[in-house]
Image 1 (cartoon, rainbow, N blue to C red):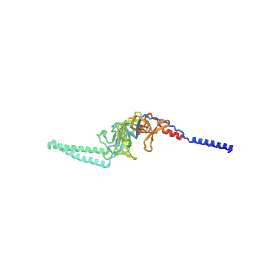
Image 2: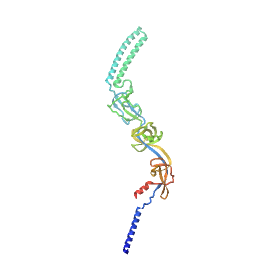
Image 3: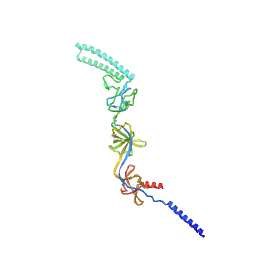
Image 4: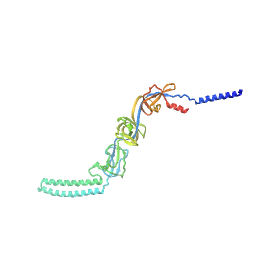
Length: 369
């Protein structure tokens, strides 16, 4: 082999070795360095959110005691009223049948009264002459007084049929709709000229106005069946209103429905809570609201972030990897407790001094490479 050929062969060999070294360095995996985090003491609060609204604790609907046409509305929504204040007046529109019956009753009573009067006047003279006894005269006088009273009643009944009231009733006239309790008028669904129906055994009647005590409000909402068993009467909750931002009103849970209703395939249970109002805010009836309800609370427990957890593919048990040396970790199965969605209680498996591998950091580094 010539000297020139040896030189060329040597150069090729050197280049081949250099290429092998370059590929080896390129394909060599760099050592992954994981960050770690220690368990910590914290308070874990498990909450649920119930959606609903705030409504007055005491709300009264005013109903008419007689049917007719609304003649005048003297109050307005938002007005503060006291029991007995006039809200509206009703003009009676009597039926022809009822009016005719009342007129006939008066005619019959007038006939009976005229006859009783004649007998009374005739027998009064006989009594004065000593022809009849005192007892007979008193019986005739009684019949006369009864006939006079029946005529007066018939006339009063006709006035009630025609006008809805009669003389002598004063402020108890059926045509005057008055507040039965003190509070704020939150709704007046009728206007002048509306026809209204009286409240009776077969009909609830037309609502003239709704009066509520706006100083006493309650939260009404619903919770899922999976969480209702953890609720306790008397528990303190926080109510947030959609119309009032950055403000939470404390409330006390006072009612949990014994029976649920199915909605959208899930059973929901109604709850109620007394809301403690703030004088700086005016809470209107019907505001949509959310209630934060504490289901479970544990103070000063050992916890880790839920992001550190892994689950065994076969047993599905939770575990973490604890640092034992430089870039060396061992698997530790955990017994877990309460979680708030971010942190989770560790009952056993690690101590406060253990360093736990942060998985997300490693995965991020690998994506960058």
